[in-house]
Image (cartoon, rainbow, N blue to C red; front, side):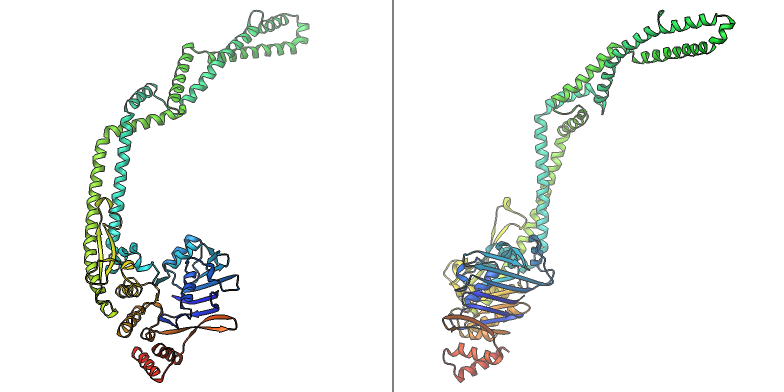
Length: 556
Protein backbone atom coordinates (compact mmCIF):
# COMPACT_ATOMS: atom_id res chain seq x y z
CA UNK A 1 0.00 0.00 0.00
CA UNK A 2 1.18 3.54 -0.78
CA UNK A 3 1.35 5.30 2.57
CA UNK A 4 3.13 8.56 1.77
CA UNK A 5 4.03 10.65 -1.25
CA UNK A 6 6.53 13.52 -0.86
CA UNK A 7 7.11 15.98 -3.70
CA UNK A 8 9.72 18.73 -3.84
CA UNK A 9 10.14 21.31 -6.62
CA UNK A 10 8.11 19.54 -9.30
CA UNK A 11 6.35 21.89 -11.80
CA UNK A 12 4.03 24.01 -9.62
CA UNK A 13 4.56 22.07 -6.40
CA UNK A 14 7.01 23.64 -3.97
CA UNK A 15 6.92 21.15 -1.12
CA UNK A 16 4.16 18.65 -0.46
CA UNK A 17 3.67 15.51 1.61
CA UNK A 18 0.51 13.40 1.38
CA UNK A 19 -0.54 10.38 3.43
CA UNK A 20 -2.90 7.87 1.86
CA UNK A 21 -5.02 5.16 3.44
CA UNK A 22 -6.48 1.78 2.62
CA UNK A 23 -9.64 1.86 0.54
CA UNK A 24 -10.81 4.52 -1.91
CA UNK A 25 -8.74 7.73 -1.99
CA UNK A 26 -10.25 10.34 -4.32
CA UNK A 27 -8.52 13.44 -5.64
CA UNK A 28 -10.65 16.30 -6.90
CA UNK A 29 -10.12 19.88 -8.01
CA UNK A 30 -10.90 22.37 -10.71
CA UNK A 31 -9.61 21.82 -14.22
CA UNK A 32 -6.01 23.01 -14.45
CA UNK A 33 -5.44 22.84 -10.71
CA UNK A 34 -2.61 20.35 -11.13
CA UNK A 35 -4.04 16.84 -10.88
CA UNK A 36 -1.78 15.71 -13.71
CA UNK A 37 1.24 17.05 -11.82
CA UNK A 38 0.41 14.74 -8.94
CA UNK A 39 0.17 11.71 -11.23
CA UNK A 40 3.35 12.69 -13.09
CA UNK A 41 5.14 12.95 -9.75
CA UNK A 42 3.95 9.51 -8.71
CA UNK A 43 4.95 8.15 -12.10
CA UNK A 44 8.43 9.61 -11.68
CA UNK A 45 8.86 7.77 -8.38
CA UNK A 46 7.68 4.58 -10.08
CA UNK A 47 10.35 4.70 -12.78
CA UNK A 48 8.67 6.66 -15.58
CA UNK A 49 10.87 8.57 -18.03
CA UNK A 50 12.36 11.68 -16.44
CA UNK A 51 11.72 15.02 -18.14
CA UNK A 52 13.65 18.13 -17.16
CA UNK A 53 10.47 20.12 -17.76
CA UNK A 54 9.19 18.62 -14.50
CA UNK A 55 11.69 20.66 -12.47
CA UNK A 56 10.10 23.71 -10.88
CA UNK A 57 11.11 27.00 -12.48
CA UNK A 58 14.10 28.55 -10.74
CA UNK A 59 15.30 25.29 -9.17
CA UNK A 60 18.17 23.00 -10.17
CA UNK A 61 16.41 19.75 -9.39
CA UNK A 62 13.16 18.21 -8.24
CA UNK A 63 12.51 15.02 -6.29
CA UNK A 64 9.73 12.62 -5.39
CA UNK A 65 9.59 9.91 -2.71
CA UNK A 66 6.91 7.22 -2.48
CA UNK A 67 6.68 5.11 0.67
CA UNK A 68 5.01 1.70 0.53
CA UNK A 69 4.00 -0.62 3.32
CA UNK A 70 4.55 -4.26 2.30
CA UNK A 71 4.78 -7.63 4.00
CA UNK A 72 7.93 -9.73 3.77
CA UNK A 73 6.37 -12.08 1.20
CA UNK A 74 5.46 -9.32 -1.25
CA UNK A 75 6.76 -10.04 -4.80
CA UNK A 76 8.55 -6.68 -4.86
CA UNK A 77 10.74 -7.77 -1.94
CA UNK A 78 11.97 -10.83 -3.79
CA UNK A 79 12.86 -8.65 -6.79
CA UNK A 80 15.01 -6.37 -4.60
CA UNK A 81 17.59 -9.10 -4.01
CA UNK A 82 18.42 -8.98 -7.75
CA UNK A 83 19.67 -5.42 -7.27
CA UNK A 84 21.41 -5.94 -3.93
CA UNK A 85 18.86 -3.87 -2.02
CA UNK A 86 17.64 -4.70 1.48
CA UNK A 87 13.86 -5.12 1.64
CA UNK A 88 13.73 -3.19 4.90
CA UNK A 89 11.33 -3.76 7.77
CA UNK A 90 8.02 -3.84 5.94
CA UNK A 91 8.66 -0.53 4.19
CA UNK A 92 9.91 0.35 0.71
CA UNK A 93 10.97 3.89 -0.13
CA UNK A 94 11.20 4.65 -3.85
CA UNK A 95 12.95 7.97 -4.52
CA UNK A 96 13.69 9.77 -7.76
CA UNK A 97 15.52 12.99 -8.53
CA UNK A 98 15.54 14.84 -11.85
CA UNK A 99 17.80 17.77 -12.75
CA UNK A 100 17.40 20.61 -15.22
CA UNK A 101 20.02 18.96 -17.44
CA UNK A 102 17.64 16.03 -17.90
CA UNK A 103 19.63 13.59 -15.80
CA UNK A 104 17.93 11.56 -13.12
CA UNK A 105 18.91 9.40 -10.16
CA UNK A 106 16.94 6.68 -8.40
CA UNK A 107 17.08 5.02 -5.00
CA UNK A 108 15.25 2.22 -3.22
CA UNK A 109 15.60 2.26 0.56
CA UNK A 110 18.46 4.77 0.08
CA UNK A 111 20.38 2.35 -2.16
CA UNK A 112 21.14 3.76 -5.65
CA UNK A 113 19.48 1.78 -8.47
CA UNK A 114 18.87 2.20 -12.18
CA UNK A 115 15.64 3.56 -13.63
CA UNK A 116 14.93 0.07 -14.98
CA UNK A 117 15.33 -1.49 -11.54
CA UNK A 118 13.03 1.13 -10.03
CA UNK A 119 10.37 0.46 -12.67
CA UNK A 120 10.66 -3.32 -12.24
CA UNK A 121 10.04 -3.10 -8.50
CA UNK A 122 7.27 -0.52 -8.94
CA UNK A 123 5.48 -2.85 -11.37
CA UNK A 124 4.61 -5.06 -8.40
CA UNK A 125 3.51 -2.14 -6.21
CA UNK A 126 1.20 0.04 -8.31
CA UNK A 127 -1.04 -0.45 -11.32
CA UNK A 128 -1.93 2.74 -13.18
CA UNK A 129 -4.89 3.04 -15.54
CA UNK A 130 -5.19 6.17 -17.59
CA UNK A 131 -5.75 7.43 -21.12
CA UNK A 132 -2.15 7.01 -22.18
CA UNK A 133 -1.10 4.17 -19.95
CA UNK A 134 -0.31 0.89 -21.68
CA UNK A 135 0.42 -1.25 -18.66
CA UNK A 136 -1.79 -3.56 -16.65
CA UNK A 137 -4.83 -4.86 -18.46
CA UNK A 138 -3.80 -3.23 -21.73
CA UNK A 139 -0.72 -5.44 -21.95
CA UNK A 140 -1.90 -8.36 -24.08
CA UNK A 141 1.09 -10.36 -22.91
CA UNK A 142 -0.50 -10.50 -19.46
CA UNK A 143 -3.98 -11.58 -20.57
CA UNK A 144 -3.26 -15.32 -20.52
CA UNK A 145 -1.95 -15.10 -16.96
CA UNK A 146 -4.99 -13.05 -15.90
CA UNK A 147 -7.38 -15.61 -17.38
CA UNK A 148 -5.54 -18.48 -15.69
CA UNK A 149 -5.50 -16.65 -12.36
CA UNK A 150 -9.21 -15.84 -12.68
CA UNK A 151 -9.98 -19.52 -13.30
CA UNK A 152 -7.60 -20.85 -10.64
CA UNK A 153 -5.61 -22.80 -13.22
CA UNK A 154 -2.22 -22.59 -11.51
CA UNK A 155 -2.07 -26.38 -10.86
CA UNK A 156 -2.84 -27.09 -14.52
CA UNK A 157 -0.25 -24.51 -15.62
CA UNK A 158 2.35 -26.11 -13.36
CA UNK A 159 1.51 -29.54 -14.79
CA UNK A 160 1.96 -28.27 -18.36
CA UNK A 161 5.27 -26.64 -17.45
CA UNK A 162 6.52 -29.86 -15.83
CA UNK A 163 5.46 -31.99 -18.83
CA UNK A 164 7.09 -29.51 -21.18
CA UNK A 165 10.35 -29.65 -19.22
CA UNK A 166 10.26 -33.47 -19.29
CA UNK A 167 9.70 -33.43 -23.07
CA UNK A 168 12.60 -31.04 -23.60
CA UNK A 169 14.85 -33.20 -21.46
CA UNK A 170 13.97 -36.39 -23.35
CA UNK A 171 14.47 -34.62 -26.69
CA UNK A 172 17.87 -33.36 -25.58
CA UNK A 173 18.89 -36.89 -24.56
CA UNK A 174 17.78 -38.26 -27.93
CA UNK A 175 19.73 -35.56 -29.76
CA UNK A 176 22.81 -36.34 -27.68
CA UNK A 177 22.59 -40.04 -28.52
CA UNK A 178 22.07 -39.32 -32.20
CA UNK A 179 25.07 -37.00 -32.26
CA UNK A 180 27.21 -39.57 -30.46
CA UNK A 181 26.07 -42.30 -32.83
CA UNK A 182 26.79 -40.20 -35.90
CA UNK A 183 30.24 -39.28 -34.64
CA UNK A 184 30.94 -42.89 -33.68
CA UNK A 185 29.89 -44.22 -37.09
CA UNK A 186 32.12 -41.70 -38.84
CA UNK A 187 35.08 -42.85 -36.71
CA UNK A 188 34.32 -46.59 -36.61
CA UNK A 189 37.13 -47.75 -38.96
CA UNK A 190 39.61 -45.51 -37.25
CA UNK A 191 38.51 -46.74 -33.81
CA UNK A 192 38.80 -50.40 -34.71
CA UNK A 193 42.30 -49.96 -36.17
CA UNK A 194 43.38 -47.88 -33.18
CA UNK A 195 42.06 -50.50 -30.78
CA UNK A 196 43.96 -53.24 -32.64
CA UNK A 197 47.19 -51.30 -32.18
CA UNK A 198 46.43 -50.64 -28.54
CA UNK A 199 45.52 -54.28 -27.99
CA UNK A 200 48.88 -55.32 -29.42
CA UNK A 201 50.63 -52.92 -27.09
CA UNK A 202 48.39 -53.80 -24.11
CA UNK A 203 49.34 -50.63 -22.21
CA UNK A 204 49.43 -50.70 -18.44
CA UNK A 205 49.32 -47.82 -16.01
CA UNK A 206 52.84 -46.58 -15.21
CA UNK A 207 54.56 -49.04 -17.54
CA UNK A 208 56.02 -46.45 -19.90
CA UNK A 209 57.83 -44.69 -17.05
CA UNK A 210 59.12 -48.02 -15.73
CA UNK A 211 60.45 -48.93 -19.18
CA UNK A 212 62.20 -45.57 -19.49
CA UNK A 213 63.84 -46.03 -16.09
CA UNK A 214 64.90 -49.60 -16.95
CA UNK A 215 66.40 -48.52 -20.27
CA UNK A 216 68.41 -45.79 -18.56
CA UNK A 217 69.69 -48.25 -15.97
CA UNK A 218 70.67 -50.76 -18.65
CA UNK A 219 72.58 -48.22 -20.70
CA UNK A 220 74.36 -46.85 -17.67
CA UNK A 221 75.05 -50.40 -16.34
CA UNK A 222 77.05 -51.41 -19.42
CA UNK A 223 79.63 -48.69 -18.82
CA UNK A 224 79.66 -49.38 -15.07
CA UNK A 225 80.39 -53.08 -15.67
CA UNK A 226 83.38 -52.19 -17.79
CA UNK A 227 84.74 -49.95 -15.04
CA UNK A 228 84.19 -52.56 -12.33
CA UNK A 229 85.92 -55.27 -14.38
CA UNK A 230 88.91 -52.97 -14.70
CA UNK A 231 88.90 -52.41 -10.96
CA UNK A 232 88.92 -56.16 -10.37
CA UNK A 233 91.79 -56.55 -12.79
CA UNK A 234 93.85 -53.95 -10.96
CA UNK A 235 93.09 -55.41 -7.55
CA UNK A 236 93.11 -59.16 -8.06
CA UNK A 237 95.15 -60.06 -11.15
CA UNK A 238 98.54 -61.79 -10.85
CA UNK A 239 100.22 -58.43 -10.57
CA UNK A 240 97.42 -56.86 -8.55
CA UNK A 241 97.31 -55.49 -5.05
CA UNK A 242 95.88 -58.67 -3.55
CA UNK A 243 98.76 -60.82 -4.83
CA UNK A 244 101.34 -58.34 -3.61
CA UNK A 245 99.82 -58.11 -0.12
CA UNK A 246 99.62 -61.86 0.24
CA UNK A 247 103.20 -62.28 -1.08
CA UNK A 248 104.60 -59.81 1.45
CA UNK A 249 102.58 -61.47 4.22
CA UNK A 250 104.03 -64.93 3.40
CA UNK A 251 107.61 -63.61 3.51
CA UNK A 252 107.04 -61.86 6.82
CA UNK A 253 105.65 -65.03 8.38
CA UNK A 254 108.82 -66.92 7.37
CA UNK A 255 111.10 -64.55 9.36
CA UNK A 256 112.89 -65.85 12.44
CA UNK A 257 111.40 -65.79 15.89
CA UNK A 258 113.39 -62.75 16.94
CA UNK A 259 112.05 -60.60 14.06
CA UNK A 260 108.56 -62.21 14.08
CA UNK A 261 107.77 -60.68 17.45
CA UNK A 262 108.67 -57.24 16.20
CA UNK A 263 106.71 -57.70 12.94
CA UNK A 264 103.60 -59.15 14.59
CA UNK A 265 101.53 -55.92 14.51
CA UNK A 266 102.38 -55.39 10.86
CA UNK A 267 101.72 -59.02 10.06
CA UNK A 268 98.28 -58.88 11.71
CA UNK A 269 97.43 -55.68 9.82
CA UNK A 270 98.40 -57.22 6.49
CA UNK A 271 96.38 -60.32 7.36
CA UNK A 272 93.34 -58.15 7.98
CA UNK A 273 93.97 -56.28 4.74
CA UNK A 274 94.10 -59.54 2.81
CA UNK A 275 90.77 -60.58 4.35
CA UNK A 276 89.13 -57.23 3.46
CA UNK A 277 90.43 -57.49 -0.09
CA UNK A 278 88.81 -60.90 -0.33
CA UNK A 279 85.50 -59.42 0.82
CA UNK A 280 85.85 -56.57 -1.68
CA UNK A 281 86.40 -59.08 -4.44
CA UNK A 282 83.18 -60.88 -3.50
CA UNK A 283 81.15 -57.61 -3.40
CA UNK A 284 82.46 -56.46 -6.76
CA UNK A 285 81.52 -59.84 -8.21
CA UNK A 286 77.97 -59.42 -6.90
CA UNK A 287 77.65 -55.95 -8.41
CA UNK A 288 78.97 -57.16 -11.73
CA UNK A 289 76.53 -60.03 -11.70
CA UNK A 290 73.65 -57.59 -11.10
CA UNK A 291 74.73 -55.40 -13.98
CA UNK A 292 74.89 -58.21 -16.43
CA UNK A 293 71.97 -58.41 -18.95
CA UNK A 294 71.10 -59.92 -22.25
CA UNK A 295 71.57 -57.32 -25.04
CA UNK A 296 68.32 -58.52 -26.59
CA UNK A 297 66.50 -57.48 -23.42
CA UNK A 298 67.58 -53.85 -23.95
CA UNK A 299 66.37 -54.11 -27.53
CA UNK A 300 62.96 -55.38 -26.35
CA UNK A 301 62.66 -52.54 -23.83
CA UNK A 302 63.54 -49.95 -26.46
CA UNK A 303 61.08 -51.40 -28.97
CA UNK A 304 58.20 -51.33 -26.47
CA UNK A 305 59.11 -47.84 -25.33
CA UNK A 306 59.18 -46.69 -28.95
CA UNK A 307 55.69 -48.14 -29.52
CA UNK A 308 54.31 -46.35 -26.45
CA UNK A 309 55.63 -43.04 -27.70
CA UNK A 310 54.57 -43.61 -31.31
CA UNK A 311 50.95 -44.26 -30.33
CA UNK A 312 50.98 -41.30 -27.95
CA UNK A 313 52.10 -39.01 -30.78
CA UNK A 314 49.52 -40.51 -33.10
CA UNK A 315 46.66 -39.84 -30.69
CA UNK A 316 48.08 -36.53 -29.47
CA UNK A 317 48.24 -37.57 -25.84
CA UNK A 318 50.75 -38.49 -23.17
CA UNK A 319 51.97 -42.13 -23.10
CA UNK A 320 50.42 -42.62 -19.66
CA UNK A 321 46.99 -41.63 -21.14
CA UNK A 322 46.88 -44.58 -23.56
CA UNK A 323 45.15 -46.82 -21.00
CA UNK A 324 42.32 -44.26 -20.60
CA UNK A 325 42.16 -43.73 -24.36
CA UNK A 326 41.76 -47.46 -24.92
CA UNK A 327 38.81 -47.47 -22.49
CA UNK A 328 37.22 -44.49 -24.29
CA UNK A 329 37.59 -46.13 -27.70
CA UNK A 330 35.98 -49.30 -26.35
CA UNK A 331 33.05 -47.21 -25.03
CA UNK A 332 32.60 -45.49 -28.40
CA UNK A 333 32.48 -48.80 -30.21
CA UNK A 334 30.00 -50.10 -27.66
CA UNK A 335 27.87 -47.04 -28.45
CA UNK A 336 27.81 -48.16 -32.06
CA UNK A 337 27.20 -51.80 -31.20
CA UNK A 338 24.49 -51.03 -28.62
CA UNK A 339 23.39 -47.64 -29.97
CA UNK A 340 20.40 -48.82 -31.95
CA UNK A 341 18.76 -50.20 -28.83
CA UNK A 342 19.53 -47.02 -26.92
CA UNK A 343 18.11 -44.91 -29.76
CA UNK A 344 14.90 -46.94 -29.81
CA UNK A 345 14.49 -46.44 -26.07
CA UNK A 346 15.23 -42.70 -26.33
CA UNK A 347 12.71 -42.27 -29.17
CA UNK A 348 10.10 -44.14 -27.15
CA UNK A 349 10.80 -41.86 -24.16
CA UNK A 350 10.30 -38.78 -26.34
CA UNK A 351 6.98 -40.06 -27.67
CA UNK A 352 5.79 -40.90 -24.17
CA UNK A 353 6.79 -37.44 -22.92
CA UNK A 354 5.10 -35.80 -25.92
CA UNK A 355 1.88 -37.71 -25.28
CA UNK A 356 1.82 -36.69 -21.62
CA UNK A 357 2.61 -33.07 -22.53
CA UNK A 358 -0.15 -33.00 -25.13
CA UNK A 359 -2.61 -34.42 -22.61
CA UNK A 360 -1.75 -31.74 -20.05
CA UNK A 361 -1.97 -29.00 -22.69
CA UNK A 362 -5.35 -30.16 -23.98
CA UNK A 363 -6.72 -30.33 -20.44
CA UNK A 364 -5.56 -26.77 -19.79
CA UNK A 365 -7.00 -25.59 -23.12
CA UNK A 366 -10.45 -26.98 -22.33
CA UNK A 367 -10.50 -25.30 -18.93
CA UNK A 368 -9.33 -22.03 -20.43
CA UNK A 369 -12.19 -22.12 -22.91
CA UNK A 370 -14.72 -22.67 -20.13
CA UNK A 371 -13.11 -19.92 -18.04
CA UNK A 372 -13.12 -17.47 -20.95
CA UNK A 373 -16.86 -17.92 -21.45
CA UNK A 374 -17.46 -17.30 -17.76
CA UNK A 375 -15.21 -14.23 -17.75
CA UNK A 376 -16.92 -12.81 -20.85
CA UNK A 377 -20.36 -13.21 -19.31
CA UNK A 378 -19.36 -11.53 -16.04
CA UNK A 379 -17.62 -8.59 -17.74
CA UNK A 380 -20.49 -8.03 -20.17
CA UNK A 381 -22.88 -7.86 -17.20
CA UNK A 382 -20.85 -4.92 -15.88
CA UNK A 383 -20.90 -2.91 -19.11
CA UNK A 384 -24.49 -1.52 -19.38
CA UNK A 385 -24.40 0.35 -16.04
CA UNK A 386 -21.11 1.91 -17.16
CA UNK A 387 -22.72 3.46 -20.28
CA UNK A 388 -21.29 0.70 -22.44
CA UNK A 389 -24.60 -0.98 -23.19
CA UNK A 390 -23.77 -1.35 -26.89
CA UNK A 391 -20.32 -2.70 -26.22
CA UNK A 392 -19.24 -6.33 -25.98
CA UNK A 393 -16.20 -7.87 -24.36
CA UNK A 394 -14.69 -11.18 -25.37
CA UNK A 395 -11.65 -13.27 -24.57
CA UNK A 396 -10.00 -14.29 -27.82
CA UNK A 397 -8.21 -17.64 -27.60
CA UNK A 398 -5.99 -18.38 -30.58
CA UNK A 399 -4.51 -21.85 -30.84
CA UNK A 400 -0.93 -22.04 -32.07
CA UNK A 401 0.64 -24.90 -34.10
CA UNK A 402 1.75 -27.87 -32.01
CA UNK A 403 5.42 -27.18 -32.68
CA UNK A 404 4.96 -23.82 -30.93
CA UNK A 405 3.37 -25.23 -27.79
CA UNK A 406 5.42 -24.31 -24.76
CA UNK A 407 5.36 -24.29 -20.97
CA UNK A 408 2.37 -21.90 -21.07
CA UNK A 409 0.23 -24.15 -23.22
CA UNK A 410 -1.14 -23.93 -26.74
CA UNK A 411 -2.91 -20.58 -26.87
CA UNK A 412 -2.49 -16.87 -27.22
CA UNK A 413 -5.07 -15.05 -25.10
CA UNK A 414 -6.19 -11.50 -25.87
CA UNK A 415 -8.95 -9.38 -24.32
CA UNK A 416 -10.93 -7.71 -27.12
CA UNK A 417 -13.90 -5.34 -27.29
CA UNK A 418 -16.26 -3.79 -29.75
CA UNK A 419 -18.21 -0.66 -28.90
CA UNK A 420 -21.14 -1.13 -31.28
CA UNK A 421 -23.06 -4.12 -32.58
CA UNK A 422 -21.87 -3.70 -36.17
CA UNK A 423 -18.22 -3.01 -35.47
CA UNK A 424 -15.39 -5.50 -35.35
CA UNK A 425 -13.63 -6.75 -32.27
CA UNK A 426 -10.18 -5.37 -31.56
CA UNK A 427 -7.71 -4.68 -28.80
CA UNK A 428 -9.17 -2.43 -26.11
CA UNK A 429 -6.50 0.23 -26.52
CA UNK A 430 -7.25 0.51 -30.28
CA UNK A 431 -11.04 0.33 -30.24
CA UNK A 432 -12.15 2.24 -27.14
CA UNK A 433 -11.90 5.98 -26.56
CA UNK A 434 -10.21 7.32 -23.45
CA UNK A 435 -13.29 7.32 -21.25
CA UNK A 436 -14.60 4.05 -22.66
CA UNK A 437 -11.23 2.43 -22.15
CA UNK A 438 -11.14 3.41 -18.49
CA UNK A 439 -14.62 1.96 -17.95
CA UNK A 440 -13.76 -1.27 -19.78
CA UNK A 441 -10.77 -1.62 -17.50
CA UNK A 442 -12.92 -0.88 -14.47
CA UNK A 443 -15.41 -3.59 -15.47
CA UNK A 444 -12.59 -6.07 -15.94
CA UNK A 445 -10.98 -5.09 -12.67
CA UNK A 446 -14.22 -5.58 -10.77
CA UNK A 447 -14.64 -9.09 -12.21
CA UNK A 448 -11.00 -10.02 -11.67
CA UNK A 449 -10.74 -8.41 -8.24
CA UNK A 450 -11.09 -11.63 -6.27
CA UNK A 451 -8.29 -13.34 -8.18
CA UNK A 452 -5.90 -10.65 -9.38
CA UNK A 453 -5.93 -7.53 -7.24
CA UNK A 454 -2.75 -5.48 -6.85
CA UNK A 455 -2.20 -3.65 -3.59
CA UNK A 456 -2.53 -0.18 -5.14
CA UNK A 457 -4.41 0.90 -8.26
CA UNK A 458 -4.58 4.37 -9.78
CA UNK A 459 -7.46 5.44 -12.05
CA UNK A 460 -7.27 8.66 -14.03
CA UNK A 461 -10.39 10.10 -15.69
CA UNK A 462 -12.39 6.90 -15.33
CA UNK A 463 -15.46 9.17 -15.27
CA UNK A 464 -14.61 11.09 -18.42
CA UNK A 465 -17.68 11.98 -20.47
CA UNK A 466 -20.25 10.48 -18.09
CA UNK A 467 -22.54 11.69 -15.35
CA UNK A 468 -25.66 10.86 -13.43
CA UNK A 469 -26.49 7.17 -13.06
CA UNK A 470 -23.43 6.09 -15.03
CA UNK A 471 -21.12 8.07 -12.76
CA UNK A 472 -22.86 6.52 -9.76
CA UNK A 473 -22.30 3.06 -11.24
CA UNK A 474 -18.62 3.87 -11.76
CA UNK A 475 -18.33 5.10 -8.18
CA UNK A 476 -20.03 2.01 -6.79
CA UNK A 477 -17.66 -0.27 -8.69
CA UNK A 478 -14.62 1.67 -7.60
CA UNK A 479 -15.83 1.34 -4.04
CA UNK A 480 -16.26 -2.43 -4.44
CA UNK A 481 -12.85 -2.69 -6.03
CA UNK A 482 -11.21 -0.84 -3.14
CA UNK A 483 -12.36 -3.41 -0.59
CA UNK A 484 -9.23 -5.04 0.77
CA UNK A 485 -7.11 -2.90 -1.53
CA UNK A 486 -6.11 0.71 -2.17
CA UNK A 487 -7.39 2.91 -4.98
CA UNK A 488 -6.28 6.41 -5.91
CA UNK A 489 -8.86 7.97 -8.23
CA UNK A 490 -8.61 11.34 -9.96
CA UNK A 491 -12.18 12.36 -10.68
CA UNK A 492 -14.40 15.22 -11.84
CA UNK A 493 -17.54 13.35 -10.80
CA UNK A 494 -19.28 14.18 -7.50
CA UNK A 495 -20.89 10.73 -7.55
CA UNK A 496 -17.46 9.10 -7.66
CA UNK A 497 -15.97 11.50 -5.11
CA UNK A 498 -18.78 10.78 -2.67
CA UNK A 499 -17.80 7.10 -2.63
CA UNK A 500 -14.34 7.90 -1.31
CA UNK A 501 -13.10 6.85 2.10
CA UNK A 502 -10.83 9.87 2.05
CA UNK A 503 -10.82 12.91 -0.24
CA UNK A 504 -8.05 15.29 -1.28
CA UNK A 505 -8.59 18.67 -2.91
CA UNK A 506 -6.07 19.88 -5.47
CA UNK A 507 -5.93 23.63 -5.91
CA UNK A 508 -3.78 26.26 -7.58
CA UNK A 509 -3.06 29.74 -6.27
CA UNK A 510 -0.80 32.69 -7.07
CA UNK A 511 1.79 33.84 -4.55
CA UNK A 512 3.27 37.03 -5.88
CA UNK A 513 4.87 36.18 -9.20
CA UNK A 514 4.72 32.44 -8.56
CA UNK A 515 1.89 29.95 -8.99
CA UNK A 516 1.73 26.96 -6.70
CA UNK A 517 -0.30 23.78 -6.61
CA UNK A 518 -1.35 22.50 -3.21
CA UNK A 519 -3.17 19.38 -2.03
CA UNK A 520 -5.02 19.05 1.25
CA UNK A 521 -7.01 16.27 2.87
CA UNK A 522 -10.59 17.42 3.37
CA UNK A 523 -12.50 17.26 6.60
CA UNK A 524 -16.14 16.14 6.51
CA UNK A 525 -17.38 19.74 6.28
CA UNK A 526 -14.91 20.80 3.61
CA UNK A 527 -15.64 17.63 1.72
CA UNK A 528 -19.33 18.53 1.58
CA UNK A 529 -18.38 21.96 0.25
CA UNK A 530 -16.07 20.49 -2.43
CA UNK A 531 -18.72 18.05 -3.66
CA UNK A 532 -21.24 20.89 -3.73
CA UNK A 533 -18.82 22.87 -5.93
CA UNK A 534 -18.48 19.85 -8.21
CA UNK A 535 -22.28 19.69 -8.48
CA UNK A 536 -23.00 23.41 -8.91
CA UNK A 537 -19.92 24.87 -10.54
CA UNK A 538 -18.37 28.21 -9.64
CA UNK A 539 -21.29 29.41 -7.48
CA UNK A 540 -22.14 27.02 -4.67
CA UNK A 541 -25.76 27.25 -3.59
CA UNK A 542 -27.52 25.88 -0.54
CA UNK A 543 -29.33 23.48 -2.82
CA UNK A 544 -25.97 22.20 -4.02
CA UNK A 545 -24.81 21.80 -0.42
CA UNK A 546 -27.98 19.87 0.41
CA UNK A 547 -27.48 17.66 -2.64
CA UNK A 548 -23.88 17.05 -1.61
CA UNK A 549 -25.00 16.14 1.89
CA UNK A 550 -27.54 13.72 0.48
CA UNK A 551 -24.97 12.23 -1.90
CA UNK A 552 -22.51 11.63 0.93
CA UNK A 553 -25.22 10.13 3.10
CA UNK A 554 -26.33 7.76 0.34
CA UNK A 555 -22.82 6.34 0.05
CA UNK A 556 -22.29 6.29 3.76
